[in-house]
Length: 166
Ligand code: 4NP
Image (tube, rainbow, N blue to C red; front, side, top):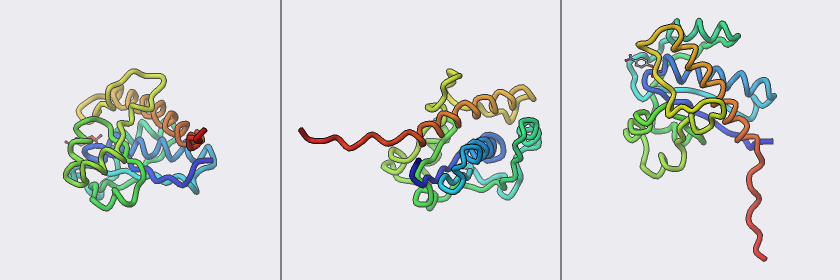
């Protein structure tokens, strides 16, 4: 059983990739019966879409998979690095942009690229579908389902026991 874990998914606008990641992860966590111990949220490095629901194209694509996205966009804040244990970014630009909100040490300790957890894909990042078509939103969701499943598996894996001195 994993220890209580607070996860924050981060992209640029917080209306396409990260709210979708939040919705996909929330569903996986609920299906695993872990909603009480794994907390999930999302935010954007930019605040342009503050207060908005996710892009309608992403909400429709997620809804076709039985996932309702009701997150309202917000910008990352410095206190997120205290409020969350692990911050999952979609690409290296997101990681760079987090420097406005956190120290190098916090970024090194707490920020991970979401694609590090993929097993069925070979992606370098989660691509931004904002200027794309319907198939781009579907591909992002396919990748998010793979990466979030891998992330949950990692969280459920018992931590390595402390090394014993012999
Ligand atoms: P997201 O996509 O980072 O996945 O939410 C974007 C949404 C909006 C914009 C860029 C990317 N924008 O330029 O407004």
